[in-house]
Image (cartoon, rainbow, N blue to C red; front, side, top):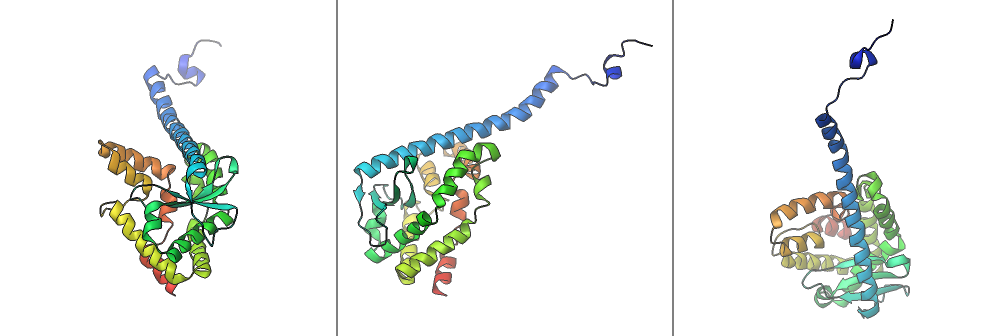
Length: 243
């Protein structure tokens, strides 16, 4: 016997256009947001690398006793924000360590050498390679930090401290960490920020409320939040170095 059984007979339930729109919206909106954040993160990192290229061409070079010959230490003007950052330039052409002017002016020679030695370890450990892979693949797996969470950054940070203490001396590293903490507090006006970017966001934004929430969500997935929280507290790092 044949006949038209409609939706029930065919085993297909009727679905309204509104329900389909809601279904696709629930699926597509998160994907679009993630893709947008990934593209923004990628563009920001490319822009940052172009800035590094200009800095390497025009910046003041610091002569360090602990940095290898293939690692350039560059002094940059970042206002009152203390910055010490190691990495690899665009197309992996040059290993570098950027140190802000306020750090150079505030730390003694040996203190500065201790924090440079800490960054040298990150370069030798090829941490920049893990960061590069995470940046390129982050759009596929739900954010850059979804990859880096499997990279044992707390262990790497402890090893970098041990290396700096061995090369320069733990007392210089401890005093440098104390001074850097004071510089961060001064730059933040006594408030605590996860990183340099969040400090700039709060300081420069006229509508800091909404942008702050958006930034925190972005930083959770793509920012340096994971790396920042992998550092032990000042007290924990000091106690560990003293022991």
